[in-house]
Length: 389
Image 1: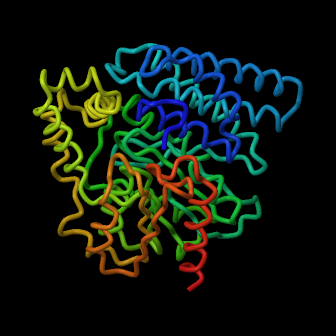
Image 2: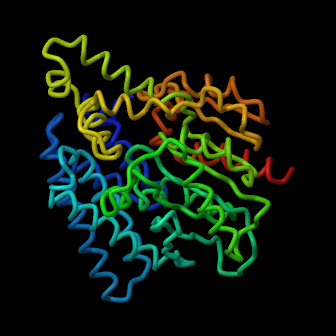
Image 3: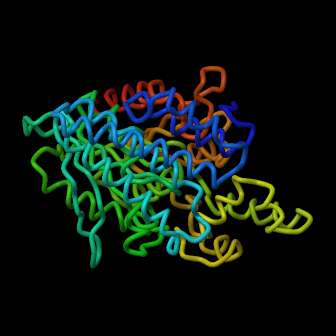
């Protein structure tokens, strides 16, 4: 499925940004007028135009807030946060030395923080104890009653940010009476940018302290904890669930069996391309981004090191240790992990189910971008049933 662009990566990222309109994270007209000013595959124009849109919408939000229009301010600031994230997406050549990347990330964080404070039940910013530091997070509550509720622990994947977690999943959970603790783990969002923490394969070492923290909160029902991981989080959450058994249910969207296979395939493709990796990166936006983002989030210097660093990112010999009810999602056109959800499902021995999202229902893209309503309906209906049982 192509959306506004022939370039596979530009199409997907434009759809991803636009899809958050379902929960106030975008307006379709704003997406269309921004993208029509960005030539195919032009990453500099992508960053500049999305940044300009984000700044314009942020001004609307700031003016509305100053005038006392709480809802208008919240809605504009939510959209601005998403657009700032989108503007920063391809700035991965050297993020540590890229002042504009840092500015855009900070702007996305701040506009979201200001919007989160304006939610009907204001979100609470968290610092979750982790080893000798803390992880950033948000506590989203379905209401302010203090009633213990089923609680989703949610994290993203290879490139997600804490701020994106709200339109991606938390907003849909809140509508259905779930509380949500969203957080960035090592390699994600501000943890890699501000703390230099890189991805680690033993993700249970990340989730266990998050659960320890969650169980100190009066709003959390300890018997109904749900772990959900998005994109590469489909491996990370599965790995954590194999070793952390205080989880009542786990959702993997989409399921990832072996991330090492993805990096190896990229290296093999580079080796068979005339001119090697440099030529392939010059030709292919998706490959260029995968390599650059991987160097940053894994703390490696090149693709060969990235391949080595991902060797342990597999559920082989581990999947059968998951004991909680597990939902594996699969997208028909997944451009990153095609075929892996079924492979993971086959090795699970717990209560399990796979839901296949088709192209002809508009939900066949990776993580079902552009089809959030359908994705949330199927996921939370499954969770409601499992937790009731």
